Structure formats: structure tokens, C-alpha cells
Image (cartoon, rainbow, N blue to C red; front, side, top):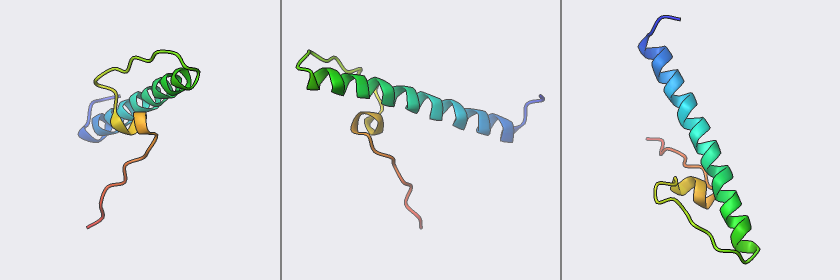
Length: 61
């Protein structure tokens, strides 16, 4: 497939969505560990929305 700005942007969005999904799974494991009374260690670069379990909605305007 030849490179186009549209295909690159679509691929980037797909990669970012995959990354967020993995970070959500990681955060869930940390919360489960905390619930079980074990120590947890969070990465400093973990996406806040993954850690908090929220979805950011862009402002319409």
C-alpha cells in the first residue's frame, strides 16, 4: 500500500488506540493488585485516562 497522509493518519490513530487499550489493561492489573493488598508500581508515563478508566471527549465548539 503506498503511503498517503490519510493512510498514515489512520494508522497512527489505530496504533494510539491499541496503546491506550494495553495501558487500560495494565492499569486494571495494578488496581486489582492494590485491591488484593499488594504493592503496586505505576509507570510515570501511563496515560491518565487509562489509569482512571475514563474516556476523554473532545469539546464541541
